[in-house]
Image (cartoon, rainbow, N blue to C red; front, side, top):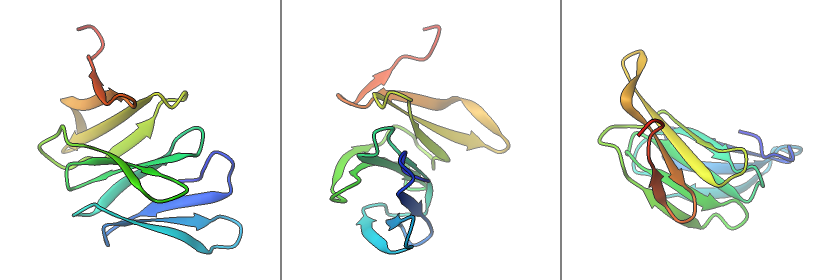
Length: 124
């Protein structure tokens, strides 16, 4: 995923680490360690100051994009996660898990990013 200013990239994968890269030079800037299984999805916050990641270890992690420090871990699912995203204003964080080829009815969760509070599903 690109940072909002296009200057950095974040990647995650089978080695259970995230890497932040300089998008212009290809130089590795940071390696972030904390996941215990494959990382499936990464996203920059709209202000470029945070990175979110998720994967098969059933956690969502939020990191400081400058220091690489882990600032938050959420564990609300009982299976691996497929996608994570910040809201356009950066105040909320969403995660999705799939069951087969579709999203389960309980497969989408949204949190207020600070404080880490689960947001009720629409219509509840």
